[in-house]
Length: 313
Image (cartoon, rainbow, N blue to C red; front, side, top):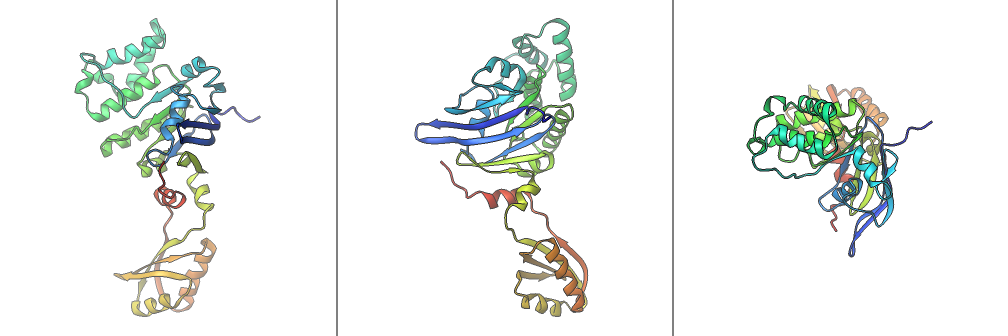
């Protein structure tokens, strides 16, 4: 029996005047999965997330969290979902513990339950040693940790994170990435949007790419990549007569953009892995002295540029 998705969008539409901000968007996220939501500014990512967080309603379609509709059961959804927006407000004269405690009380946590929740969140985010520090004095990275702590204080099964790594330095991004992986390890479904595609590629199980309100691709990076005809980049290192190798490569009609520098040839090749194996064999049979043959795997950035057209609404 198939498990109920923790997040499910069903043919969601959202209009703002003449702008179709979210256009028939459907996808699912399972428990323990990190799902990346990618698109240019104005593509519909934040609107989709706001609908999931019950901060907006779809004009048609529905979104479900742990099986509960954001339209029919918004109160149940709010108990099961933590939403981390791309910006959050701070309060004057409030320290880390007081800030987290305020949100714990707002979610109705009392007594021992609240104490345990505060302890777990401060330990998880590494803020336990900063409990008495005023939040206005925190670094950007520590503020993001605090916002994440606030988002998870009520132990939601679903985490929706809108651009959580924006403005963070490399160390803070690495630490945030590790916390997101830990959230998935303890069974949370995590939906995360980001413009830092290299970060998403490292932590996401699957991604959805949205442009002008419509999904253009959903799946793992490998699945999306395999659905498009692509040109692979190949690096070949030679010894011996490099000029002869260059002439041989230039004469091939299936190779393009051939460049050689410091005995390394870089070229584009439209074939699949089997064709690349044949190419290597033919180089050896032609007497070219190949000491390295490497095909570059396509990055999430490459895929994003391939499947989108840079259109805005």
